[in-house]
Length: 303
Image 1: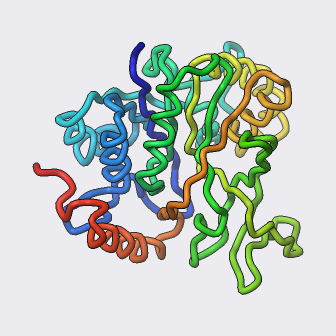
Image 2 (image 1 turned 90 degrees about the vertical axis):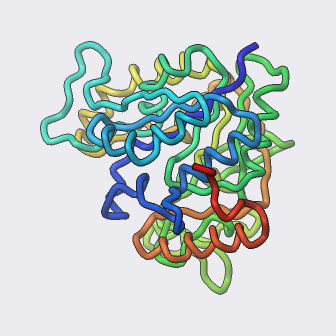
């Protein structure tokens, strides 16, 4: 049986960050958050990496990260393009925003090539535990409709520099029973609240957050394709410039329709990322602290 493949989603525009944060160095050696993800993934046992990007950043991406990583592991590319749509569906006039993370994974289907796969965001730090958990889960015998998600304590996923969107999970007997996108989440002296309704609504202190670290059996691609093809015309008619097909929404549909289960793999590692430009100094400080603790060598790669 072939080993699982790691799919790194790096096609996002990053509008809040104000730049191509996927190729922004986070230490004195020029390492990116992707470098730490790949380092952790290789230690966990992954041997194949798919970079999911846009054609527009391909040259820079290959120069800054892809060609280096290709010397250390097997690298391939997939491209999330706006015209990757079902027959008869046109790109709405003025649309520049990608069609979401589900669409991104569908664009990587050929590169996944029927293998079990993990999917992560390029601009998130997940911690070494997450990769060990997901790799071990994917390597164990499971049914074609049994998937996994790394779950984080919600307070471990917040930034001090603004609000965030998180998939807030309900977990029953170790399995995901529901996942709801909550917008404008922030922490305060009393815990976590979300503000998308205008009035602060508390989030339970023990809430589990999804940070888009998934482990999928290849059969999930059939469900995603059917869901995307079925919804796209109606959704674009109502929201042509901003509609996105998102993994949490489609995974929830898979569970609700009885077509799959998702094991939640809890980790106590702290997530961090560069949602806003102001996050970069704290991310760099966190990386330095992890090096001091011996989690990573001072120089991540030898050359």
